[in-house]
Each structure stands twice: as C-alpha cells, then as structure tokens.
Length: 164
Image 1 (cartoon, rainbow, N blue to C red):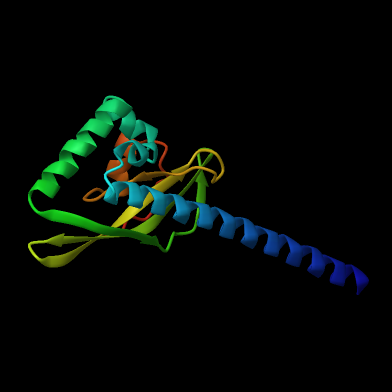
Image 2: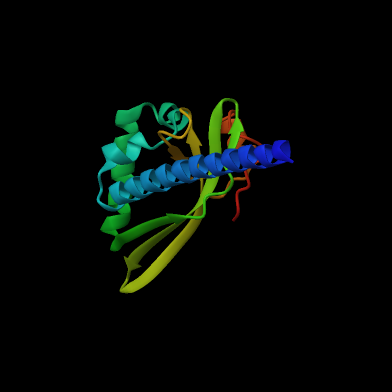
C-alpha cells in the first residue's frame, strides 16, 4: 500500500510539473504573439520582423528587405483608409515537438476600421520555437495547407492543423 501511495504521489508531482511547464510556455507564446501584434498595429516593423520565421526572412532577402516590404505593404493598405485597431491571440493548440522545435497553431484576430466600418480578419498562425519555448516565431499560412507550407519550411510538422 505504501508503494502504491508513493507511486501515486510521484505521478501527481510529475503531472503538476508538466502542466506548469506547459502553462509557462503558453504564457510566453501568447505574450510574444501579443508583442508581435502590437508592433504590427503600431507600425514598428523592426520589432515585427524579429518574430518572423528565419526561413521567411531569408526568402524575403534578409531582415532589411523584409522590414522595407512590410512597411511598404502596410503603408499601402493604410493609404487606402484602413486603420489597424487591434490584434488578439488565443487558443494555442497542443504544443508538439518536431525536429527539435516546439510547434503549435494559434488563433489570430485583427480588427481594423475600413470605410467607417469595423472589420475583423481571423486566421490561424503557426508558432515555432527553436529554444524550448523561450522565443517564438510566427508564420501566417493564410491560403496554404500544411503540405504547401512544408515545401517552404520543411521543418514544420505535418501534424500541424491549419484551419481555414
């Protein structure tokens, strides 16, 4: 009986530790997603770029070109009367480990004013950490399934679910 109680206690401690680790990682993930969203809303493209997956930075020709293209694209949208109001993030999926990276998806909702109306654009983002959850990169796969995304970024897990 004493062995069974010891085993149950040991398992309980392990489960509580795993939950607190997952909660800590999810908190870091959501905090960094929020920081990325605020930088987007505020037009702080250098900060926004630091959350961009390194493969995408390379595909864009480097960080400076990425920042310049982001500024150009978002400024063009703003010149058409669109005002970005807020970006919210929630509901990260279960975090999986794939090729020594933590990966998951999360829900993004961007509110904007356009032509006097409030419009909301919802999307699923892919989040990737290459350092056990300390720092996160975000990928907007809008319009692409995971198979297509893996052609661009082969280290993405085929198990990631991208909702449309």
